[in-house]
Length: 258
Image (cartoon, rainbow, N blue to C red):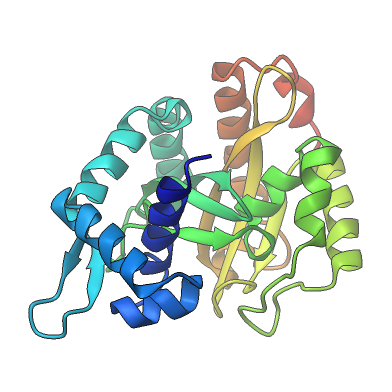
């Protein structure tokens, strides 16, 4: 690997994970010399990948990254194939629908359909969630090959709410149940008051290439367990999307009503 490119990527990821940072702060966080950090920042700034705040002198991400992000989304096969099915899911279930893919130990939201009402909602495209704290993440990881699933279970699991599962033994057991049931849920594990249910989107090898799910108020998504009608619409969307992604297993994965 080219060291300068790796370091530039580290700077971008660090700036993307928090508030504006100065040269000294970046140097301390990354363990790099100030001169090295300053030189990389100047190069990134010249390419509009970072910007320097005129008053504080600190840096934040630049507009070119938004262009690249939009280009990524427009060219993402799963997102493009999910538009119709996710829109239909949101209308049928009367809940917000999200499509996500695994990105490291997080789920990246690549498509988000608002709940079809007049409430104020925030577009979550581009948001990242710890995989273990959301139904989307658990649905995806449960249907990964074991050699990809095992490293995720070895990592430290962050606590987002009092209901976030951080016990690796408990999470492993839950993933086994998800594989059997064909869907996952989360009950206020990422945000207090919110719940979700999700199913994996399978590719031609039968492994998860992403997930599609519903998210909303606990009393709506999980009134006394998964709402049967909403779960049925979710299974339909997951089955159709898996078929579009080349899976030959979708006919059996979501036939269960467990």
